[in-house]
Length: 67
Image (cartoon, rainbow, N blue to C red; front, top):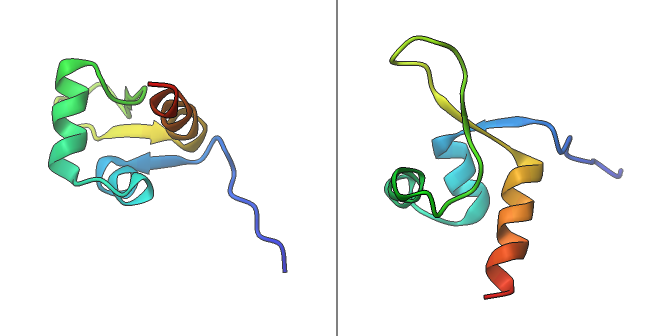
């Protein structure tokens, strides 16, 4: 059975970290200094989670290989 992941699927920081093989803390640091993948807030509240689209994570990985 061929299961495809929706590239527009949204992941939390913890899920994105697992997807990339990084720690959640490393994801938070990269988000803070602007060196990580594109992310967005899933709402207007101060405690709304930061989310990542799988396609953005994959694109970020490709850019890291070029360095």
